[in-house]
Length: 291
Image 1 (cartoon, rainbow, N blue to C red):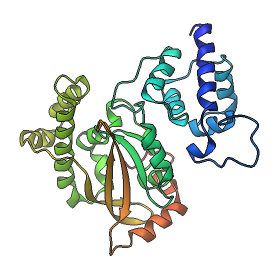
Image 2 (image 1 turned 90 degrees about the vertical axis):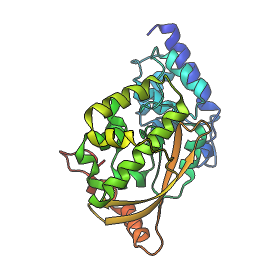
Image 3 (image 1 turned 45 degrees about the horizontal axis):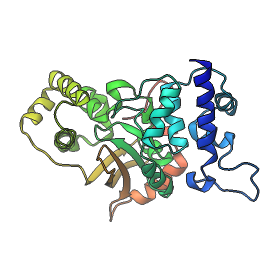
Image 4 (image 1 turned 135 degrees about the vertical axis):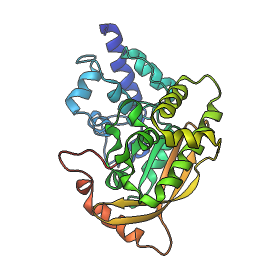
């Protein structure tokens, strides 16, 4: 990456860091702060980077940041879409397509996610069911879904191509979940309009790989997933009977999901237990997340 552009990248990161108040990202401002906005170590923590690495980026030195790091920095610094695109250009990286794991998370979605109480699992997903961000309890409940890349980043894709992805649901729930996924996908494609390369490729693969998907797709059912019941089998706490609520971004490309206990069930107590259990029960050293 040219040195002049790398220097500009560092200056841009520093300027964006200095405009953010700690309370904007869920941090305590503290009694005294010597710098405006966030400190470098705070941005590093929010982005999942070492302080040394982030400091080198601001100084215009070090290695070229990866797509995943740029996406994390955009979230940590609450960048707008135009600012996120500028960040990628300064890093000499291609602008990510919509729907993938590096998709820009709307700052408003980030703010809402940070304000949801610790006993409520929540996450931000795309209209193609790629998880962009999870809060800690959602990771405890579903596993860390950030490990998936490419087409497999979409849970909808894994649902129809990887039988193991379904073991988180009771078997009797598989059929209605399949129908719900396909109807929601048709609604998403309708919103995106004809000629969208991403959904065309996804459709081609699913129709070729899954007879179940092909049968459901031929029915032409359409329905947006807004508020539904979901039963989740967790290896440590057992069956969680939940409501799943959705809040959509203005363009409907992203949605904030949060999970609440169904009345008359023990789901509330089990979610509280999950805050203690954490992610340990979701995976062994040889296995990835349940989903």
